[in-house]
Image 1 (tube, one colour):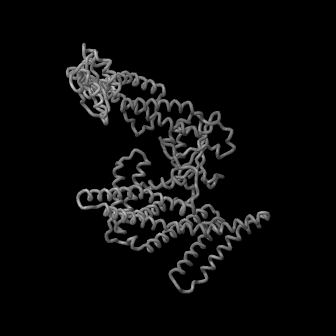
Image 2 (cartoon, one colour):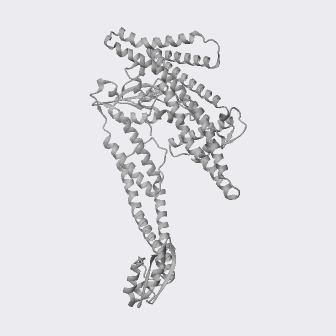
Image 3 (cartoon, helix red, strand yellow):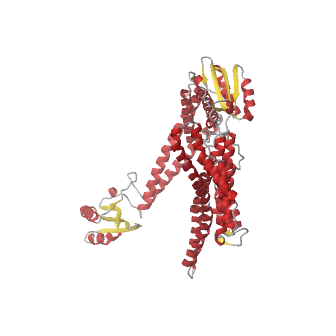
Length: 632
């Protein structure tokens, strides 16, 4: 990265910001946070104009929603002639045109919903043609619900009263019924119905005649309303077609203007000039300088590397340069932190180790294929970048599981001849392989840490860091010593012990010597404790980190063991006849679904954990920000 700074006349800020936006490689910074001598300079006030842009965007979203209009995702960076006032006037015009139509459409939709509800009520609750009770001269008609167990009580209570009971439908434990009696017996009827907890169904006030003719009229009214709604929708579509290009242009201009304002936010102002500063990749520095020089009114321009300035490397933005294949693994890195500028990018190592560990723990052709299918079902064009990367990770993980399934000889838990090894039949071998994987990962972490320290010219860290060269020598000598003891009965060479003891002595004496050299004699006891604890951390930490990789073998065995249990359970529930066979298949299918979902999630977590805590802990140094150049 290079820090490019330039001073321009204040009236050129708009043109400069537009040019930087078009280049798409300028990551703006406030130089006042780097150079204390610039603290007195003022900043460009953009809040009021930004609020106008936000308001226009909100109106565009609202109008687009009502017009069912998709705003374009491709933006025109040329905004010559754009005016906030003209944009507001156009949106006002479109809003007025569409508001009355939308309001009318919504009113008709509400009316149609009401009519449909009335029609459904009539059809559901009227078993035959009748009129409301208020239209009868001598009959008392009541339609309602009663518990089915209360029906005998109702019939017995009405035995001495002239009546007709017509139950016509059942809803749960209740019967819908119509009770018809004489108007003169109304009080007796009401008392009996009250005693059996009768729930009367009231007729809608809009219905005066519920005959078949009335239903036909109501249906015709609904059809007419629906036709009006379709006509209004066509009008809305026509308005959308007429103004789609204009609304899209406003949307594009507002987005571009907001990006230009963001560029201005970081500029420093004097009475007549503006100072811009930002990070640019070294490969693009010359093109940025040429573009800025082509603008008249440039009074000064300079560039500096982070190494030549008193800037902490943590403050330099980090640019990931990965192919689309590795892009999804950036999510795993960023979830832990942003690697500091100038350190080795761990993405390629994480991509390889994550997929190896996932496949080793989840090795099954069928389950891997299921993950691949799920990734494909997410669609070719995912809605967001995060979802696209998740889809790609699923595809990679599924492919790794398929490869290891071939090596293990497993298809949906069904074993066949393996190409490489069967975990359940070679338990000690699979544990050894997991330990070897851990040794490789930890050793790689030590090497990366040493290289990072060399880049920083921090030679103390190169030698004396817990994951430094001396700690690495102790670890590798310890691995060699243990290996010799396990595989050979021959005499163990003395140089293993010599390397370990020498490394321990150096790590123990360094804090003490450092304390004496700096003449901090009062801290001798503190340094002694620091040396002791540091050595314990080296031994216990490396041992714990290495043993932790046993979980790769453990989960590979657990995956096999789970399906042994599932197949045994399927045999237990299987009985003669189609019923037992069906239950057995249900057990097998549900077992595989659980394995793909739950076990797949657990294996993912373990793969991430091993990378974070056993690998990253050896070398990772965090930065503060990702390189985000000005763009729309």
